[in-house]
Image (tube, rainbow, N blue to C red; front, side, top):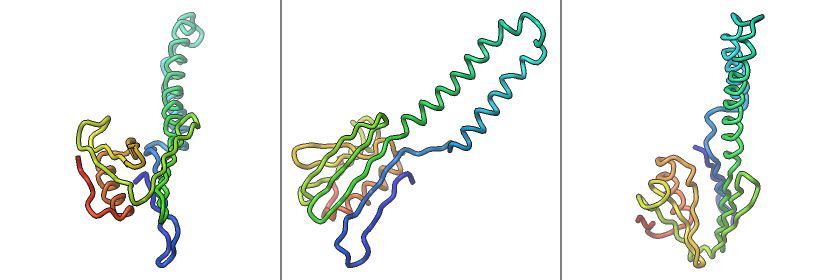
Length: 168
C-alpha cells in the first residue's frame, strides 16, 4: 500500500506517524527502459527511408510523437511528488501535505476534537476521507485507491482512538 504507519514502541509515549504517497506503477528504471524501447520502435519506419527526401518529411512527426511520450511520463512523475504526513501526538493531530510544486499545506487540531469521516459518495472520489476539527475539514489520501481509502478509514479511527467512526 502506498502508505506507512510508524508506531511508537509499547509503553513509549511517542508520536504515531502516517506517511502517504501516490502509487508509482513504473519505477525510474522501468521508465528508462520504456523510453529506450519506444525510441527504438519509433525509428523502425525510418530505416527504409534512409537516403530519401521523404525521411525529412516523416522525421519531425516521429520525433514529436516521441517527445510527447517523454513529456507525458515526466509530467506523471512530477505530479506524483505529492506526500501527506499525519502525526498523532497525545495532545494533537497534525497533517502536512506537500504538493507537487513544493508548496506546503498544514492542518492541526486537538486530538480530542479530531474526527475522521468517510463520505461514500458526494466527494471528488468515492469513499472520500476527511479529518475534521478546529472548524476545518481537510481531505486525506484522495490519491489512494478506493480499497486503500476504506482500509485507511478503519486504521485512522483506531489510531485516533475514536469510539465510533462516522460514515456519511
